[in-house]
Length: 120
Image (cartoon, rainbow, N blue to C red; front, side):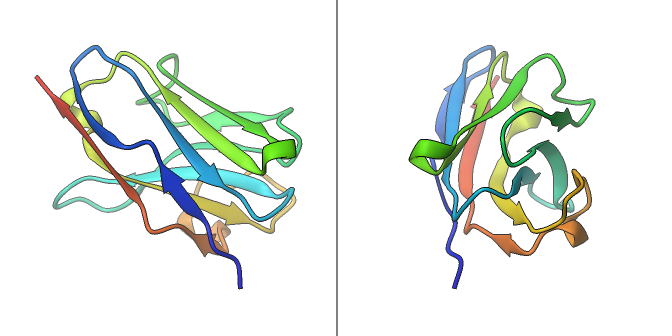
């Protein structure tokens, strides 16, 4: 049973930064998604198994950085220049696909989520 666990969420003022962490099960492609109140869950970023390839949603490009440390079995999401519209529950997810996936259907396992709140 794969269990993913996110941490690092919290409250921050607009313009601030947070770093999320996700304990990964192995060397698979990993993604971050988020779900704001009243909205559907959306793709944020994905990284391939060795960290050589990444992809971002346009809404976070240039502000968020996804990275991983396979020795620590951890995937990170560094979030900078945060905006109130970044407020959401953030989920990490594991994909057993060889390709980088941006749709929820491309992921096999999900964490429970961590809340990020950005105040204006």
